[in-house]
Image 1 (cartoon, helix red, strand yellow):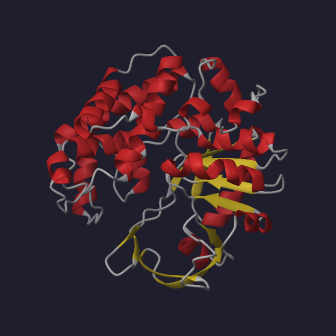
Image 2: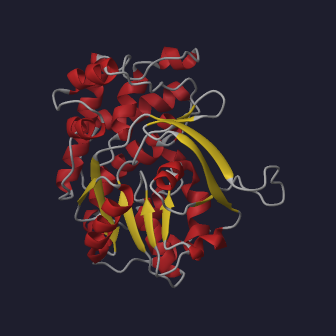
Length: 352
């Protein structure tokens, strides 16, 4: 993201928990070399402390979901009411949680949620960042809701692609299909993961895995319908993300592979497809379904099977789920909080 924004002529700073000013052995800017749709060498200013973010009018969050619990409460204390915060690839209604924590701290920044990421990127051997594609169009929504139109215009200008405004951050959260697709891609390839093989993701996303992803997507769409959310199908997402025509998923997957996708599948269980997308994606969807009294047998079965195969408490691995959707929340309260029409219980936004 920082490389892409630098290429577009913006002044960019980047903060990470890994930047420890007391042990920084590489002072100065962060130097990155990129290939793919963004090509070249770039320098990005390193921000040593969260307080430095206050000097930037726009803050883009590109965090792994596993870092939400540790980073977002501190971040909320340093946001200002004048800032616009763009939350990339958000899971588990984390933008709602951040918004409520910022309000508890006395500030009301605009929080704009994206249901996916702007681009794909992976570091290759030697440290080069490869960016295979930039998405053509995806959805967003903001808190407060009346800021969504302004955020739509801003994002079009900042990132140079098309966006579609949705009615609330709940719609955006339900539009994130990564957990659905990644479950279908992983479960059929666990022997490859166990043996740490190097395998191409779409080449090995075979019809049985596609069938599982389709069944999971049908349950996601059923949840969305119960909450009155308008979301895209898995097919539509692929058509907007890759240079392929919309068709059945199996045909699209073959075409994505044929046209040269270099994306590799996981070679370890300690991979974001498992440790992020399953607890913060599928387990979150299961919680939403339960609050709407909807049965999601395929989704629940996938979670249970993965817990057995991986010897992990995947449902318990989502450390923000009870803070975002508590015991007192029902379907209507979730809808109203996401629309900004219900005053939240701000005290529960705190992490003890």
